[in-house]
Image 1 (cartoon, rainbow, N blue to C red):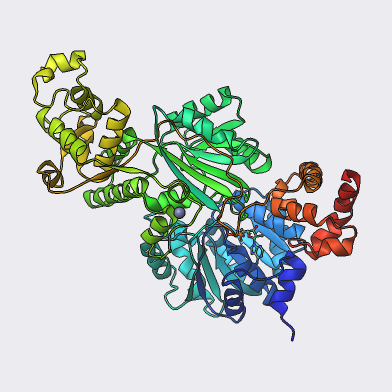
Image 2: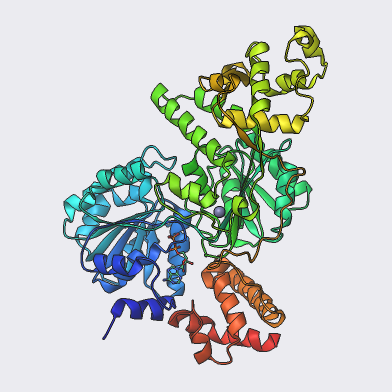
Length: 605
Ligand code: ADP
Ligand code: ZN
């Protein structure tokens, strides 16, 4: 029986089969149905509209918010021999006119366009004269004003449905939380569309959280040690912090670049370009960096400061490992982060209700950080998805945290906060507990308090851990108006009265060293180390790919993904026929690069 979708998948894209719900989505949209597709990053969303675009008559319009993203997607499609183009502000009038002509004369299968261009009267009437296959609305969460990617023009995309009610629409996003999903369906008039919700698990990501020692940069460097020569992103809290962390990494000999909204725009764009095109760059950035960073081989995302919410953490870490190969999500945080973020929220412009919501989100993230549960289970649980736990690929599963009975320590800590008047930060309270007679202690006469020196059984680091966990658990709050002064909460009473028992995580003796984390027991998506001969072939292929990419001025992964090169290196094909059977090699790539690849393999033997 003929199966045109599968045929195309194999012939054009070189994939042996569909992933997850791709087949159902493709069939639904090809048959003319509307769809809302919720799939994690790297899940394979693009094919869900690219295949229907090829299967249906006419040209598919793809709405995409970011210029860089469009260009890469179009470049990748052209490499596959697909008739794709984009229209955005980087083209001059002549090029735009040419593409418009191609659209009208039916020479295009996919046209990527920015929302502001699509919505112009001129363009809408142009579309009236074209034959349309479907509308794809990528990064559909841009319609939601609660996310930081809000794009007001997305709200007006309902015009597509009003003007062309018979053309199917497919909206896609990697946003996992239910309120945003509902908002997308409502705002884009997609309530009747069929919803395809995939699992949001990212089995190839390894989650790891450490407690900050000082500024956290030392620990970051240890972590980066395990990722030499690999591309990755380091997220930091503020522009200033981005600058200093980038400088420190550069000083340590790493190929690190800064990125934040306060930089000169052309330098910023240049840094982004370099990150996309070159291998092994560490981008140090605020969260301004990331949406639409479609680089599949980001091997790690490190948060050197606490993100704002679990949603943000999930989305940012999700930029690692789009290619399905092993990648790490690392985070370091300390009490100072909590104070900084609370301050940022409370002093922000938002209304009271919004601030309360943001503070609750921060608390949920803190709970996640301190939890001893499987990270994957906790993370997916937050998005309403059940997971059995014991994933074998997070710090809590790999290295189950030891805990200790912290009931006494917590009581001492809380009463010392109370005795010192709930007006000092953790540093001073810890000095009092440990009997360290600083000037400040003497100035306030705190060596006369009943809690003076009652905590000398723990060292400073252990006390910091206690206070961090008390704040994370809501048993203390940090008053941001008063420089992080700790205050009791309604939950403190039962602890002080000895009515509840508390268990705390052990603070690691030394900051955990970043280890090489390939392999592992997580099964499916882990990278297998290559045998020595395959490694030689792989290295030769990578080198060839780099120079080919440079010649064409495209990112290396547009030519072939790492996983494809690895598969070629392992299969060691001797002729074009054998090469064509390696997953990831479609007809067009075989045509273009087949001989060159075989030559490389021959030379490397
Ligand atoms: P998303 O947009 O959901 O983040 P992409 O569409 O960019 O994901 O796909 C992620 C990666 O998965 C790409 O490298 C793509 O080639 C690969 N991929 C997608 N579908 C399949 C499939 N059916 N078989 C093999 N690889 C696939
Ligand atoms: Zn786990």
